[in-house]
Length: 235
Ligand SMILES: Nc1ncnc2c1ncn2[C@@H]1O[C@H](COP(=O)(O)OP(=O)(O)OP(=O)(O)O)[C@@H](O)[C@H]1O
Ligand SMILES: [Mg+2]
Image (cartoon, rainbow, N blue to C red):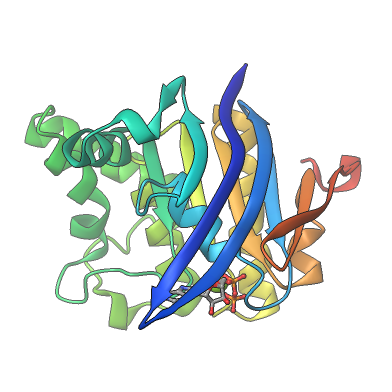
């Protein structure tokens, strides 16, 4: 099932009087359950593309259909609802709230959905902590966790509401290779077990090695788009 379709997407940023072209006609179709990475040099448009897919910004031209909805037709409020209900985000710098514990960071998206009792939330958060290998650390604040542990809290937070998509902009860029691999293994497991569609970005060949589809960007265009045979990593 197709979950994302980009047609001729362009994005120009305005810098003073200058127009900076960031995307120049991107066409991309993504099926449910894909594990896709954008790769490409600095400035090639990876973050711009993820921000558009994540409803954090709008394209200058072209169309983006996410889960059957044309994003250009949605009001800002509707876009925010799509973002809140259907998309999980993982960031390069983890973006955890420093004064909140691991538990409180993870429960936040569920609390905002306003749909679950405290007991239900507690059960889901404890299960998520277990799933990402952090059982027992729920009371720690981000500063009391390693980088790898903080990113696993962020993954639990992204997955807690069972999103259709998880978008991750360079999720391992601030981690050493061991923690980076642990985070990718976890993402791959969630993708296979729960069928969540993952779209992430990286410069790192090790990370690209995990992708099952690798889309290379260059100067705001797709330079190549290939399926990767990942039997070795698919466990
Ligand atoms: N808010 C902005 N205002 C103006 N120009 C921007 C803005 N954000 C990005 N750009 C420009 O758009 C282009 C694409 O940037 P983008 O951040 O998408 O690249 P990237 O592939 O994510 O790079 P990196 O690997 O360094 O994160 C670059 O030329 C960048 O300078
Ligand atoms: Mg970027």
